[in-house]
Length: 130
Image 1 (spheres, helix red, strand yellow):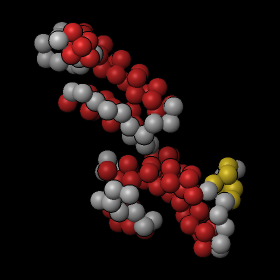
Image 2 (image 1 turned 180 degrees about the horizontal axis):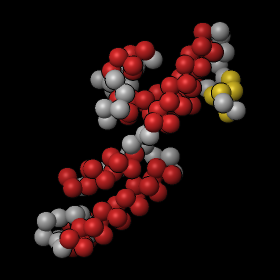
Image 3 (image 1 turned 90 degrees about the vertical axis):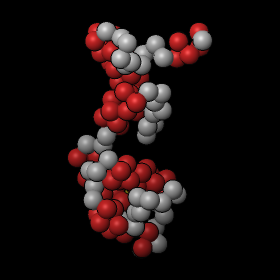
């Protein structure tokens, strides 16, 4: 019981005061931001009231989506020319960085920020688990 109580300390549960719920959301947002800064693409939540906060922190902005699209196009064109790595916008790009960019686009698609048809232009299937 102590473990469960401790784990749920920062849940924005209904039995908490408005101040306690706000503090819980704030701590959750800071934790999610820290995870994002460390390169994570998402965060587990333990309470439905946490979903919106975490989704907002990990939501790619318009510039991140545009950058991912440019980089995926450039890498696809480079691969068609037989290249495995290249410089894109002053940074090295290869299959691994292409995977990160594609993951950004899939996340944006899952959040309704990129249309399915646009994802298909990049050969991305939002229903695929690979």
